[in-house]
Image (cartoon, rainbow, N blue to C red):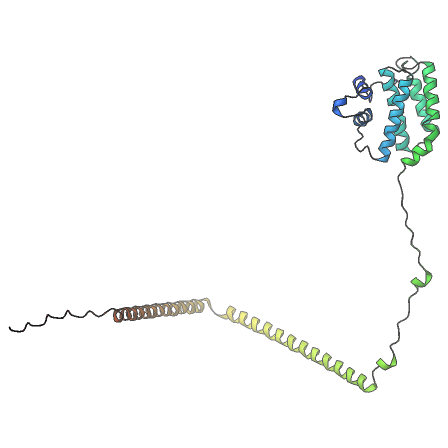
Length: 284
């Protein structure tokens, strides 16, 4: 089986250079760039902070051993892959360490294509000792931090709360007398009789309406077509004569109104007076 190289898997040489020597004008720290390169967006999330702490400590450990960029990248990707698989699959510490040991051996013995000699034997031993003294020493805490929380709510119920209580008997002072009870029963009986009578009347009215509708339909069906046409033609003639009479009556009323209006306007016109003749002169 060919070995999968973890060199440059997550961090390239340029990214490592940016992390170790961040640009002061851009305002990013090495931790910020590390979060950005590993797609960690919410850096204030406690779980993401644990990720970043582990990643930063891994790079610091590699720098303490004076690793070059290739060894730093390989060490970082190995630790990251083991950590993510351990918390995602909830692995036991033995299974997690077995995966880590297999990966570190694949990068410590130069036997292509099965393994590559990225780390020396001394470096491999120091890496394993560091993982045992740091990550696996607190492995249960890592598992606890990434375990989904389950909240349980309990409700205490007293046994007397589930017992059905009997109905309360009303006091005797609120009870009805025999006469009041009889009057109440008689009133209820009258109301029932009224409701029954109303239902009978409504049913009779509905039956009568149904009967009339049926008779009307039967009558329409029994009338011959010729009679229907004659009746319709007679109705049309009557309506036409009524329409003409109404139109002539309306025209006469309209003309009478115009005549009255003209007479009123004529009566309001000013009367012109003839001019006065000059007085005759007296003889001298």
